[in-house]
Amino acid sequence: MTDKYDMLKLESQLCFPLYACSKEIVKKYKPFLDEIDLTYTQYIAMLALWEYRQMTVKELGEKLFLDSGTLTPVLKKLESKGYITRERSKEDERSLVITLTDAGEELKEKAVEIPAKIAGCVPLDQEQARQLYSILYQMLGYLTP
Image (cartoon, rainbow, N blue to C red; front, side):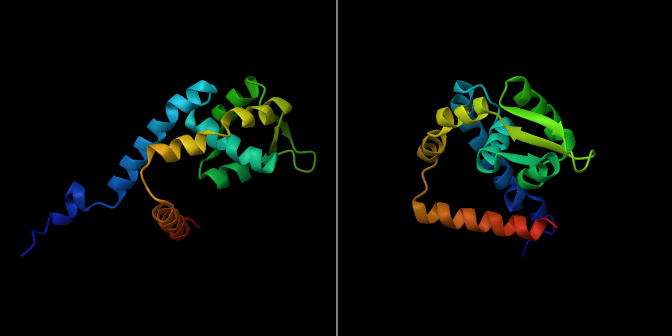
């Protein structure tokens, strides 16, 4: 017979290993990101900008699952480092457009080895990594509108 409080045990929570793994993986990124003077949040913003070159704050927030209140200080810091520019859209003054600068594009070369370095820190084979990636994105699809 199970105790009615079993579901309240830490080991019964799906959220806990997700949270703990996320925290530990971000910690693994830190020494590599320190070399290029980025925080993890700045890094994921740059990943999106390296892919798209230009997007609105709203689009970036949707991609990163972050609100504008979280993104604004990150973007201000990236702008102060010369990696992006932020300008009001000419079509819609309410919209702020972020554009990658040449310096931001050059930073990409310094970051190119980070994914392989992180893969070396996580002992999953390619199939396990593919399955985990698939499951996590499937969950995100269920959890987000």
